[in-house]
Each structure stands twice: as structure tokens, then as C-alpha cells.
Image (cartoon, rainbow, N blue to C red; front, side):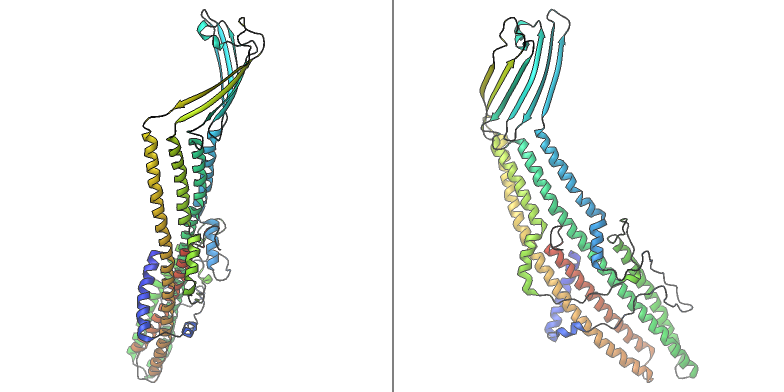
Length: 510
């Protein structure tokens, strides 16, 4: 995109200078059609004896009419591998988000311990479940049973014959109440899941622009090939008349030799133009793929004409700038990064608070009582727990770092907003420049054709020669090539403007 933009900017300077020197070109000049170019039909084109055999372009599909840019865009959405790779990020982000929820999974803990030898023979078993709570605490419950002869210092391990049931809960009152590492992990992966979308949009905009660029270059290469073919055919058709004139003594033999030189030279240029046409088709095949997703080299018979350009309307620039600020993925991505950093900052600030928790549990033994009978009564305990690092440098350092990151993100957001505005204005300048370039190029074709026809009339009257006719024909061909270049530049600038607006996001304007 930058390369096209630089080219358009240089053309803008030339066009503005030409406009000041010659005055405004009437809009009607844009509508002056190019001389008709016969459709590419490489399979039936006659080759004169002795002429080099021009390599044929491949035909690998049923002829379905001219290839449109919409077909290329649809192919990119359907089968372009790098876009498929970008879309796979959704699954990755979804998996990471699910993984973060794993911090709230129920945890089961079971054990069985047997003291089979020794003075104290015991058997203990337990099963417990713990559930982290979203507001920072946890709830737990379990069952345990302890039988046998226990050491006097471990009598709490003993239970009634039916075992003991226990439930409890812990809840932070300061640090960990508003947020904690579990909640922060879930929130961060949720934001990361959202951030995948603007990244996909960014890549899709780039892929569609690249596909459009290859498409218009293929169209331009095809029309350049047709001009080279027509120029060669003119020299071939003229050869018959010149040879007849030489035999009749009306034309010098050197004119026949010169025309034959033209044929050889133009055949060489035709081969070169065809090679570029084929290379452009191969480049396009990376974006235009068949139903199986394989690159498809387009048949020359599907060459389309350039759509007629529309005059750019600068009055829409302000509305387009606002549209770009709404649709471009860069701003959406940077705002999600701000959300992510804010979540981390909230955690860091929460970590500066003291750890002040409360807890409560209840237990009840069941079944035949122990000899002492001290396990049977219902038990209920509650407590408060306090802990705080005095200096809290870890939390203070994190707060400072995340606050600086937020300031950094704000500066980046301002830059991206300014950059988007500049991109839209720059692309509009390129579009206007390309349009004016096309006006000048089409005016040049009209003038060159008049000069060419005048030179042919002089040659027919015997007051000119093949050299001057060739110069006029070549000048006309060059101006037609300039028109094709101008049309290519216009449509590339149009694709660049579309990319600058960001309307090719997945959920944007189709």
C-alpha cells in the first residue's frame, strides 16, 4: 500500500503542475473511450511463418466470462490460507479463556493411611471437595473416618465409628475481595478473546488489498499484451502492401526490410508482454483459488475490462474520516489493550491492601461414640486472619508499571487516531491524482491518434516512410499504455482508499 501511495503522490505533483499550466480539463474528456481492443483469444491467433512461437497462457477452468474483483475477494474469504490461519486465533483465544476458568474448578482430595505395624495401629481415610468462589473465597466440605489406637498427641485424628462430616468457607474482607488473580486471569482472557477480532480484521483488510492489487495488475498486464499484439499485427498486415509496392517499383526495397525489422522487434515485445501477463496470472493465483483451495491460474479468455472510474468527491472526506475512526481495527485493538491493563492495575492496587480474611467451619461426628465421647458434640468454629507485608514494594512497583502502561497506551491511541485520519486524506489525494492522471492520458491518446493518422496519410501519398510511421504508431501505443497505467493506478488507489476506511473488516460494510 505504501509503495502505491508513494507512486500516486509523485503523480499528484505532476498532475497539479500540468493542471496549472493547461487549465482544468473538462470532465467529458474522461468519458472518451479507448479505441476498441479485441478480446484475448490466444488459441486462435494466427502466427505468420518464420515468426517466433509465443508461449500460450494456460487455460485451467471452464470459461465463465470475465473474472471480477468480487470473485477474487470471495475466494480470499473462502480459501486464502493466511486468512484461515488468522481465523484460527478465535479457537486459540477461546481455549485460553476456558483454561482460565479452570481456576474455579472443583478440587477433590482423597487419601487412605494405614499404620499396620507398631504399638499404635490406625486406619484413616478422607474425601474432601473444595470450590473456589468468584468473589475471592472458597467453600469446602468433606468426610473423614479414623479408627484404631491413636497416639495421645494425635487424638484429633480419631472419629466416631460412622466418621465425621465437615463443611466450611473462607472469605477475604480486604485483599482479594474486589478482585484476585483468578478473576484477573478470566477477565484478561475474555479481553484477549475480543482482541482477536480486530487482529483478524487488520489481516483481512491487508489480504483483500493485496488481492485487489494483484487483480488490477493482471488486468493491466492483459491489456498491455493486447496493445503489443495489435501493434505487431499492424506491421504484419502492412507487410503485404509494402511487398506488393516493392514488386511494382513504387516502394523502395529498404522499406520492406525496415518493416520486417519492425515485425521482429514487435514480436519480441509481444513475447515480453505475454510473459508479464502470465506472471501476473500466477501472482493472482495465490488469492484466486478453486473449490479445493488450490491456486488457480486464470485463463486469458477471462480478462475483464477496467470499470469506468468515478470522479472522487472530496466533500465526503469528513464523513469518511469519521467512518474510518469507527471501523479501523487499530483503535478497537488499542482500547482493548487499555481494558486489559486496567484489569491488571486493579489487581495490583488490590494487592496493596492487607490480607484480612474470615473463616468458619462446622463438623459433626456420627455413629458409635469413642470411649471418651468427646467427638459427638456438634462443632462450630469461626476466625479472623490478618497478614500484610510492611513495605509492599511488589504491589507498589506493579501499580507504577501499569499506570505508566496506561499513559503509554493513551499516547498510542492518539497516534493511531491521527494516523487513520492521515491515511484517509492521503488515500483521497492519491485517488484524485490518479483520476486527473487518467484525464491527461486519455487526452494524449486522442492527440497521438490524430498524428498517427496524418503520418499514414503522408506515407500513402509517398511523402513519408516506414520509420516515421513506426514512430507515430509507437507513440500512440505508448499513450494507450499510459491510459492503462492510469486506470491501474486509479483502481489501486481506490483499493487503498477502501483499506484506509477499514470497510473490509469482518463485520464492516461489504
